[in-house]
Structure formats: structure tokens, C-alpha cells
Length: 70
View (cartoon, rainbow, N blue to C red):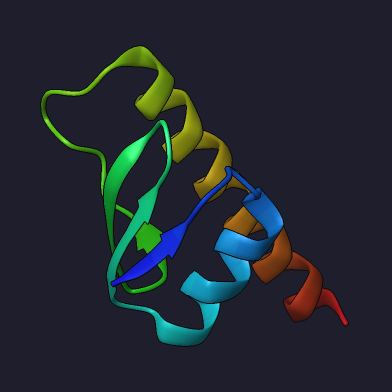
């Protein structure tokens, strides 16, 4: 499990793209699980957490599209 002391989306996405499956912890957001290079949305979570997961998954997808187009 990797711990991030701040919410840094690009650094988090880089970690997820390298490891593909695992768990991370982000200060002020909490523990997030990812599988196949995408974050899993928990059934019960705060709006702040849902927004962060949506943003991270969008960033992951946009980077995948950039790689595929190159």
C-alpha cells in the first residue's frame, strides 16, 4: 500500500498505471482500491471521495487515449 500525503492526481495516476492493481491511501480522502488500472467506486462514500475517484479515472482514460493515438 502506497501512502500519498497530498492529493496529487498526476502522481497517483502514474502509480496506478505502473502497478494496475492494489490499494493506496491519500490524506484527507482515505483508502482507495484500484484494479486493472482503474479506481473502484465504493458503495458508500463521501461526495469528496466520489469526485476524486471520478477525476482520477477520467485522467487515466485520457492518458490511455493519448498513448493509443501516438
